[in-house]
Amino acid sequence: MALMTPRQRLASAWLLLGLLAAAAALDGWRWRDKAADNAHIAAGVPARPPLSAREEVRFAHASELATRKSHEAAVDAYRLLQGDDELGQAARYNAANQLFLQALVLRESPLPGQALPLIELAKSGYREVLRVDPQHWDARYNLERAQRLQPDPDDAPVDAGGPPENAERAATTMRGVSRGLP
Image 1: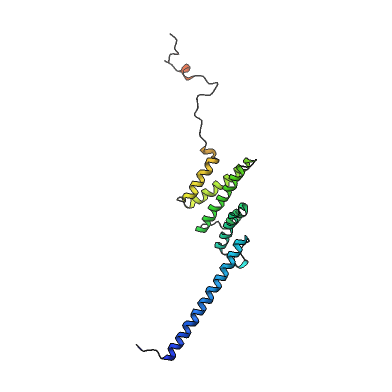
Image 2 (image 1 turned 45 degrees about the horizontal axis):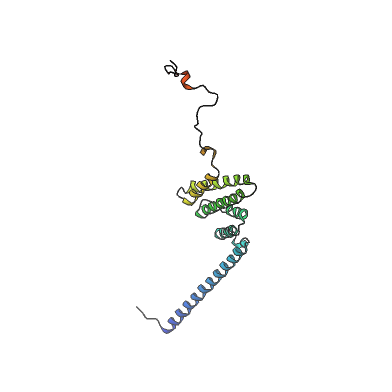
């Protein structure tokens, strides 16, 4: 193996130093770009136009809206992200949560009947999540909570009760049954 000459070592050192400077500049640019994204998210405004295609930034923006209790805006932002991938599933689940939270607030208001459509939409969102991932325990739990607030018509208990009010008693029409008389 041949040893490097001093001139080759100096050239290699300069090359290495140049590569390190380029890597540092790239990292600095990325850091500045992420800082700008975070500033937009914290301000509650949508991502800058060049970043609008980045789903993670849009998801973070929707989460920030949810944190600020802007439920309707958060649901709209999450709906733009709903797909079949993992982020889309998380967006669908979070949108259903926002609908459910709105419904809980409306149930305590003077018009609790307005919560019913939101509960149904939340249940639908939870069911969509469970269709893709039946083991999503958080969605399963929240669906059960929503079911307790507003059961589906199919889930309503059937009243087995007694005979209808104006019906004949069975003993009077059966042969061989004594009605208690001699």
